[in-house]
Length: 399
Image: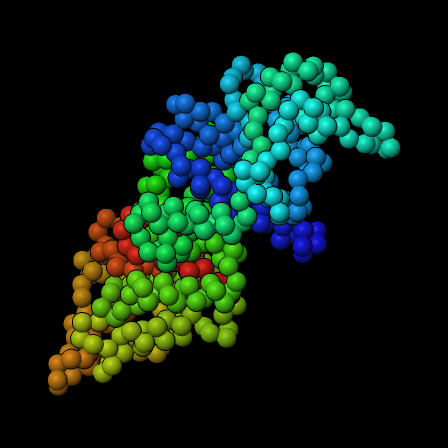
């Protein structure tokens, strides 16, 4: 596949995702739903409507019969071969470069037959004749069929973000980086489910999912943006949420894919030391600063090596006696500090950071005090108990 074809394919997926989000936001009742990748790309189920939408983002400038023949044939096949009698509406939602929404051609019996006619090996063929579909049957299909010209990619995406902004009464920045990203995550996660029943999303599930998962970025969102734009948005997000303020309690989760990688240029213990020094450095950190909590997704061997290296660097950590018998009471205790003469900064502390494995964190969620901000440098999601923390999933690992 050429680079141009690959870009067009990816853009087509995004167009379908954006259309799915748009349809979810347009649902009236909480119990109304869509199915992602159902009969077609998007199925809509409400008390008054059952529709199936095939979504096509085409590079061709103008409408041509050959561009819509295949999706219409697929819809025809389903209409005549469906095992259940239904009043399903079939919608072909397609974008052509120079076509304007609302300016769709009339698809009557004559036009439909024209679309279904094609040439193969210099022989003219008629799809409806090959399939034995009569004129009355074609008219029955047309009564349930609609062609809709879709909006241009960027225009539709802006419409989605504007609807999210209106729904949540938020800023442009929040609508784009938080709610739109979360919408993508929900739709994509459902799209890859194997069972169709798991690909159903109600309006209520969608809205609650957007509102409670405070993940700022995911891989699909990053692919949509350039590296420069992504890093700029990340910096804006950190400033807007004040995630790096020293007085905020911060958990930093480091995934096993990072810990098991070649970290010779920046060994993990040096990385931890640098973080600790930046946010909890004696004679520099303010007296109300909080030590970082480093959460490691690793086995005992790697954990011992990291701890051994930290000890050799005289870095004192609080691990709640994890390897003896974890104590949440010890782990939750604030460090005992001495302050500088003017009382504004920390001069000494009983420990400079907290250290815990991911398994211990998960096992003791009920008794460990949650952070204000959680940075998840891991491909694995964390339990929903952290939803009320400012969860930032930067996914810097690919950059």
